[in-house]
Amino acid sequence: MNKLWLLCVALAALGLTPLSAADKAYNPSVVDIAYCVPNTTNPFVGWLTTSVQKLAKDDGYNIQIADAGSNSAKQLEQMENFIAMRVKAIDLMPVDPNNVQDVIKRAQKVGIKVMVAGTDTGVQDFMMNIDQFACGQSIADLGIEWILKTFAKDSKPESLPTGAKKLKVIVIKDTETLDAKNRSDGIMKRLQDFGKLNIVVAAGETMLMAQAMNIMENTWQQNSDAVAALTYNADAAVGVNEYVMSQVKVDKSRFGVFTGDWSDEYQTLMDASLQGKSVARGTMRIAGPRIDGKSVPLEQATWLFLKDLYLGKSTYGKAAYDAVAKAYPAAK
Image 1: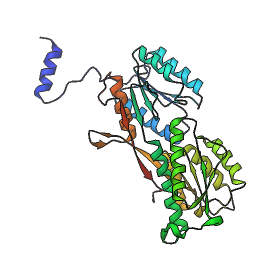
Image 2 (image 1 turned 180 degrees about the vertical axis):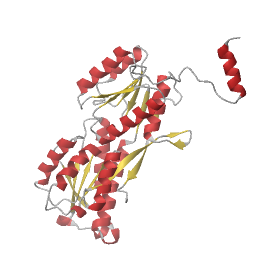
Image 3 (image 1 turned 90 degrees about the vertical axis):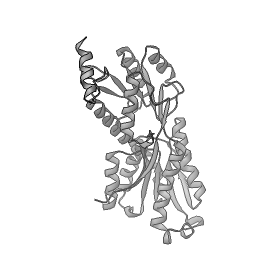
Image 4 (image 1 turned 180 degrees about the horizontal axis):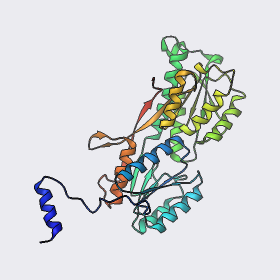
């Protein structure tokens, strides 16, 4: 009768569960899981990756974050490196969802489980995603709600200016991927259906802060009477916010920026709008999926799914769909 068996019997008698082979001590020299993302300077991506990494470390697992710098070729190289390292699982946010299928298949061929976040590549072991079109519509709803509250008598749409005096809003889209296009289309469709605004679509598209600043500057030359700007994501919104805040002739209390994605950093930026130190007024927060009938925060669910893949399981099937919720400035 071996000692391990005796230990298990003793723990069972006490109503405890013995440690499984999956329980482990944290070893910083061993990369258990790879987290491949487009750009960690994006507030949302930076928040999510560090949060998941911390949760993993608390459980004894080492997640290595790979920042592709928005370069799809670099991301493919990072994926190849992790395949060579024989990590157990990879969480991939593709820079370009259209060119990662082959590298995912190579990872799977050597036994690496791949989770894809934010899109459907068709070949992943597990997918986390949201309804991007609905998210875009909700971004537009944030802007419409604020415009009605700020400019309409009793918040009634019929009291907004009409004809040539329609209030103007700027939209900075991103359509480089199917998911980005769906979200941008959702923004446009909701604004068009509302029908009370003059919609100006910026000539350039982006999801990056620096590019958004340049696009806003170019668009502003002919549209400095705009009252709001809507962007695909929070990184672009930060760029728009910085540009608008630099314009001394703009009444900051009567301009709003609305977007998708949430982070602690972006929440702080929205909170600052209550003191006139920002024009960021709303975003769509990914609230995480429902698991066993309960809503689970995004970062916790991400780690739960990744750990499941690491252990070679498929407890949660093939996909999880995250809910979204509106996030506003919070009074201190």
